[in-house]
Amino acid sequence: MYKKAVILVSGNGSNMESIIKACNEKRLELDITCVFSNKKDPPAFSKAQKYNINTEFLSSKIKVIEEKLVKYIDTNNIDLIILAGFMRVLTPEFTRRFSKKIINIHPSLLPLFPGLDAQRQA
Image (cartoon, rainbow, N blue to C red; front, side, top):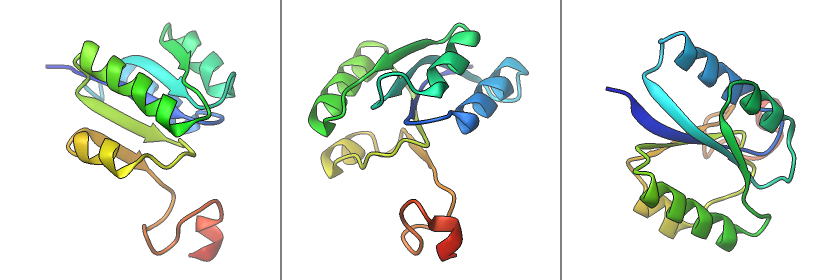
């Protein structure tokens, strides 16, 4: 049974595109319903639209981001929230509420190597 998922991005969307391709090739049993971003028109949006996946700009303000996400997640019965290069820190309240639904793709071991230079720090 396929799980309904959303992907949150801030930039290019290379990890997002790999996830979408894996879904299309039936290697992942996910239905990606929407790609969200805190940026108005990130390169990831054109990649997602190429696969006929809806895209939506959230906001640059974390409170607005989380309000929109909660409404969408609850309304659409989303099973999984994938953070794939999402460059905003979600609040503890949000992460607690969806603790069993969030997957964060990060290029290093957290919390040892946080931030933009994680690979160099390692």
